[in-house]
Amino acid sequence: QEKLVESGGGLVQAGGSLRLSCAASGRTFTGVAMGWFRQAPAKGREFVAAIHGNNGNTYYADSVKGRFTISRDNAKNIMYLQMNSLKPEDTAVYYCASRSMGYFDTRANAYDYWGQGTQVTVSA
Image 1 (cartoon, rainbow, N blue to C red):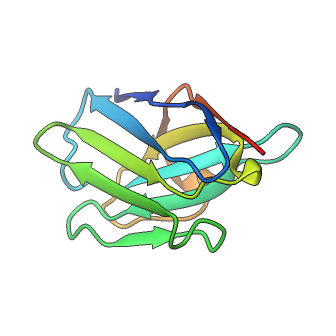
Image 2: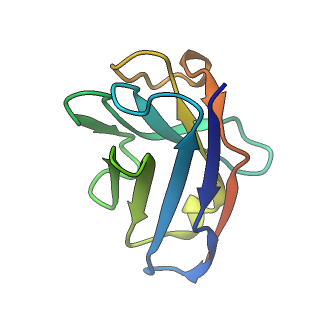
């Protein structure tokens, strides 16, 4: 049973930056694809970014491409999401997720484990 714990959310002004972390425990981290999703009030869960379990390849939603960077430290079992040039429309609860395969997916139902989420609020 894998456990994922997000941290790093908060309140920031538009144009600012935040770095989210996702600490994983309970199973082998290396080789497991990881992703970040977000959910704004009254909206469905939206794909943000994902990283391959083995080769480190990354993939981003068009809405965050060029502003967000996903990375992972396999030695520490931690995944990160560096968010720059934040916009009010980035306001949401951000979730990290993992799946039992090395290659990533943009669909939420492709992931097996989820964190509890961390709130990101961007003021105008």
